[in-house]
Image (cartoon, rainbow, N blue to C red):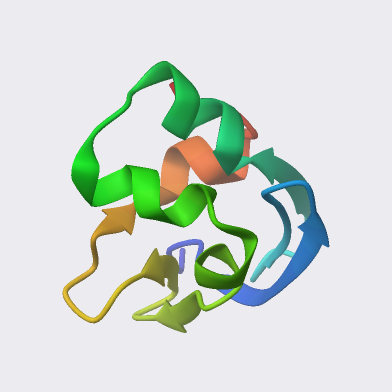
Length: 83
């Protein structure tokens, strides 16, 4: 069985993203809530909507920053719950 990976990511506003996975499932993830619960200088800059919108898909996962400042386990994203 192939591993699950993200094939599409869209900014849906209010620091949330809609993710489509390789198994055709979809999740909407509230990244802003995670950042507010876990403040850290490395993450806090992504509370700025302009910086937040600069995510990319790399190696099948959504990442923020050149050095992957913010990344989540794909299993958590697929389940729809980042903690």
